[in-house]
Amino acid sequence: MPWSNFVSTSDDLFRDVQATFLETYQDVIGRNAKLGNAMALGMPSNKRKEFYGYFESPPTIDRIDRGESITEDSFKAISYSVENLTWGKAIGFHEDDLEDIQLGDLRQVARGLAKRAAVLPEQVFFQILQGSSNASLLKAIPTAPDGASLYSATAGGTDRFGVSGGNIVSGTGVATGVAIRNDFWGAVEQAMQFQDTEGEPLLEDGIVDGGVTVVFNAANLEAYMEAFIQTRSASLGASLTPFSNAAVTNTVLEGYNGGVTLWPTQRITDNDAYLFFNDIGPKAVFEQVRQPPRLIDETRENSERARRYRIMATLLDMRAGYGINVPYGTVKINN
Image 1 (tube, helix red, strand yellow):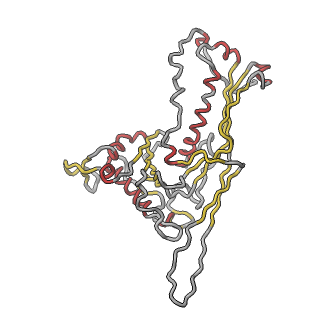
Image 2: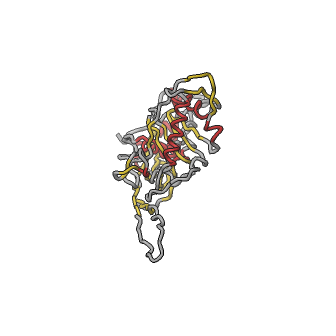
Image 3: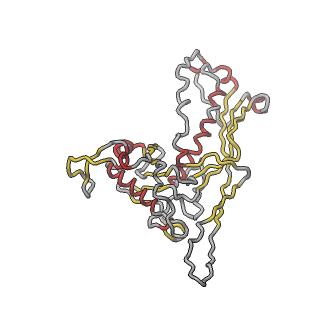
């Protein structure tokens, strides 16, 4: 066969077909606008593999008594790399169908591949977030420059960021809004205990002032709405069960001005949740782009296959790489 995939058609499409519902499935493809809160997008790249680096924290200052020499210390420089990968897809169609289908221009629909390219960073982001396998995306999940995965209790054999549990905290489930809100504050408090490489406080106490994005399973939306939107909730006892009819203040709405952005998504299928501090940079996950998405039309003018077999195609390809920075700007709630 001179082609592997092409637009499937039915006889009905060659009749006088109404295009009233032509936009079905066409306008619903899109990248979530909240992705930029958690991932650095479109970083420029001009080579096959990009190398990045940073300095660890400078040494702390010591007291020098009279007659003593100033002490000398050192600090590390760390480097890591991200390779650009090639991504692409093609849609083939017979010239007869291009001419005869009454529903619209096949080529215009095929150019919707550009929308799929825009969603690619989100797909990879969630693959990295959950450490999942996907034969169509990354072959292996990258590690952070400290040698650990995006979320890890330890790095290099010690507590990550100098705190037990690293950037993972144990949750108490999603049965109630109060439980979710308590876990949210537990994750924030965990981040506030992060230390730099010299054992000093890493993040300021105002880390939440710029807002926090919470990514979670869409199936838990009602409970998260109760946790972060409902102004009052039932007071709970130690077992997280209501012990009175008294309502308690929502500490997110009335005690915190930074704001919580909720991102419910079906891409997460369990009860885990992920916090991203909007103003903490660099972002934990990033995309570098070597070659932006480009569309190529395979036509009679440029394709021997199109001339001989009347098979045309629209192709999209791009080159981009995905990596992890030192992820002190995010905490996972493990439920």
